[in-house]
Length: 150
Image (cartoon, rainbow, N blue to C red; front, side, top):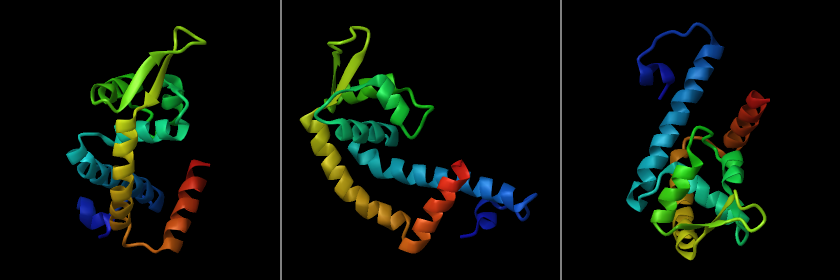
């Protein structure tokens, strides 16, 4: 469905303004879809992002600063997210041996198992979200978005 119909706006000041609004609208739509998908697993997209980063570091630990650097949502509070994941038994925290002021975060077996299950189902869901575009269109979209961020 066209953006104008979705947000009930007939005209934009320019194609650039429409593109900016369209990117924001689509990002929010995708975030909502991800949130809805993850709700039965009792994790948020931001928590999922932390688990994926930790899996990439596994078996090594990651500092909270590393998590912040790699997170997709830079506005998230990584320490709070790690604490919530710790309460669920999906990660563990321990003091860094090299720097006692730093906390290291490790994904647990339970976290790895959840991530494996989620990733299998998420691949299917991701295809459903993007089913209206071809693989070539997705590639072109990626190229344009990368170019936009310059």
